[in-house]
Amino acid sequence: MLKKLIPHPLLSLTLTVVWLMLVNKFSLGNLLLGGVIGLLVPVLTAPYWPGRPSVRGPFKMIEYVLVVIWDIIVANVEVALLILFKPNRDLKSAWVTVPLDLRSPEAITVLAGTITMTPGTVSAMLSSCGTSILVHCLHTDDPEAVRDEIKNRYERRLKEIFQ
Image (cartoon, rainbow, N blue to C red; front, side, top):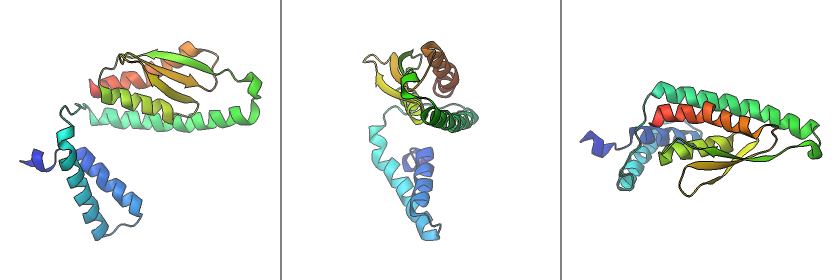
């Protein structure tokens, strides 16, 4: 019964919090409206989620988010230094193919989003069979090191969360 009322509890909570952040004012009315949105959207979209991804370990998710936030901060500084102090002719951009061990579409989407959110890299294309992702790096001396870092830093953690 509760599963039909709240098919995606995490999504409901997320939508409520996002609503409160969008209106930028905490009040009982805004909380109730956010709660209604948080309950209605998952109920109305539940038929389109036939195979919900299984997520294991909320602490692993928190760890992943903290790692990504740290990497975004560090990459912002690195990219700023590149732009400010490195001449364009000295930049060595590269395309890197990252073979994927992930099979869950949700996990692959999170990985691609993580790569794109981190300044200096962009996930450009997923292979048609879903076994590799093409990443563009603003500057790297060692494309294999970029590939290994993506696999060890992000993909390994996502495998622990999604598989």
